[in-house]
Image 1 (tube, one colour):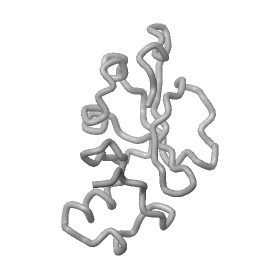
Image 2: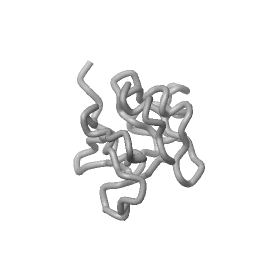
Image 3: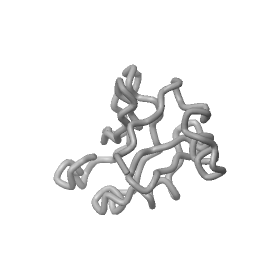
Length: 112
């Protein structure tokens, strides 16, 4: 997750939803015009309001900011980002191994 000090008042930012090897998912702060064609970048949001970045309110960001393709994203209770399809499957009680995970990899969820 980004640090509050990384958010400069005179710049606009997007968030990159990144998936690393082994299923670890994270968010990266990107300046508005930064390149996003890195292999680990799965999705990029529209520009995120500075106030939400400074509060690091990922739940509110997911509710109010869409992906550049118009899609939505969600967070589980531990802050792991999920696609709409993944979130819907989890909500409906589908077993983890049967969910159609992005890239076929189950995200690394924190231990229970």
